[in-house]
Length: 390
Image (cartoon, rainbow, N blue to C red; front, side, top):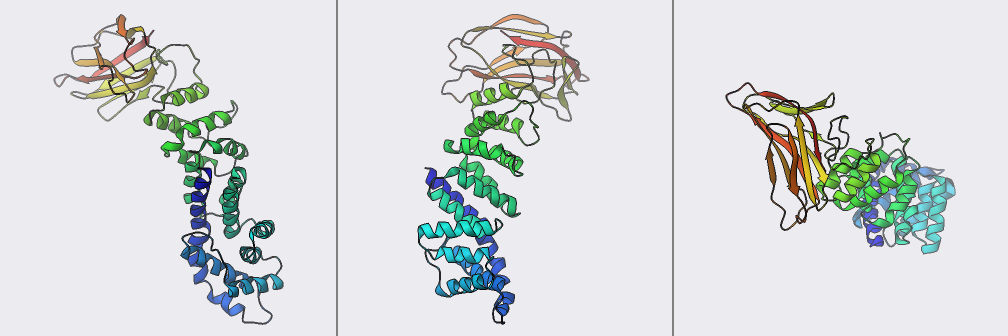
């Protein structure tokens, strides 16, 4: 499993660092070709020709390193090194013509000469992947991302997909603790990879520090992605770690509307259009709609225990006849036989309304407040002071 993932990510790394640049390198060969005919030979020009030949072979070989290097290419690389001993790609080309252990030794020496050569970094990624050395793979990807401006669009999604494998969590933690410049792009990518979401949440919790800057992370997007992917427990675990709200043990979070939501929809998700909307102001949920308008105003994902619950809702005034307002509970889980949706009309204060969740088979529910204004009235402005389940 690990080897397959590593080798697959490798192909993309080579595509970005070697194959994608190959066409440009080959197109520029006219000047190096002229330079190597002059005396004394230009070692850097010879290096450029030898490396371009290997890149062309990578393209023809399906973005993988070839099994053998042509004799003319090896001779060109050898001449380049003789003329200019600090030609890292010439050393890399010579390494490709050697046996395995010698290849690794020479590639490591080439890497010491320059960390900015994608051809060398790509080979090191391949080699580390085949040896299941995840920390080394990530280290070389880090080098690639720091030294190649064109690498990020392909390498970042590759890293995000690799996190689907749990073996990557600890190495990623060690790499990201160093705050690499590509970290924000990485967190932006993982939220769109469903297979990586669970491990992304575990990794995010492992990296959490109360004094951290949240500019690197995409916590709200990660929580929402977990919920969209039906990974409710992981979403709540991460939310409890990140939220500044005190854990009161209440089943409805921020039911007295004292703080602005930060991580919806575990916090309140406030929905607004040009015709209706919701806002939290001064410890009150405010619902507004123009004539003949409405829909879902707010929603929250809540976790309910398997027992009889008691609901209470306190509007700041009785609801006028020009408005229809409902409190709705609907199972959020994709289960075979979900419980029926509970839709409660709200006209005035609700106290001690019993809801039986004993045998529902559902733990996670959408709590919605929805409504619509009359087509004959002037719309409405309604305030709700609190909502609770206990």
